[in-house]
Length: 330
Image (cartoon, rainbow, N blue to C red):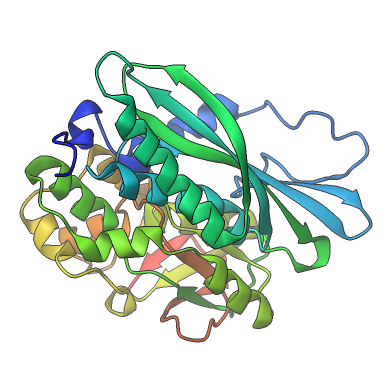
């Protein structure tokens, strides 16, 4: 290690696996509703649990706003910064938008970890913002017991070309643009120090090209797959769209080493909570425990799940008419 510190050891969890469990989060925000929506210009708010807020500013032009941050998911500070930035920008891409400007969100245990590490984290975030063509203008920092990093991002989109999680229709195929298994590999990394370059490469890849391809293909419904896992985010999409979803478990791509990590017990608490949350809404058929855990694996900076066919991305299932369960695994 370049800095002699394992950042993942300074946090109780890592990455999007540290999200508040979806069931608990929905209970917290239930009934709060949206603020300032008297004009009807808030096109996407709390109701569908989508990836970002969307507000109309003029005609067909809308602003997409989001924030995302988390504890270290890898030990290398520069890679952590890149991953966190790509993850934050993903929410804008998942709505069909283009990020315009971001600000850093940094929490740092200043008496425990040297600021040279924080500088590397910020450098990683900056480099990904440059790659995305997104301005990065300052941010906010606090002294905290655990290191945390991410961004608040503002983007722009066309109201008539949004990707929303409540626009799914029965008969549409489901495309997944990145493989699963990031959560279990990250958990193995935290426990053992093993480095999985294939996971870092996936997490630092922007979802920009995937979003562009989805829009060009005429898609109107999508979400990104992050802390709630494929099943969790698909359940939210199906519920918001009033349909059910069928997943072909054999068609879902996984990272090399992911199944071995599950077999060896490197499953985060976040993944197990995801599975508990979706289980009452899922017909798992003959899927074994390993497959169930991978489908619920808490991803960090995962890919897009698109209702529609995206060139180059595997089709992993389809949306169907609403049934007794929102999810069916085959």
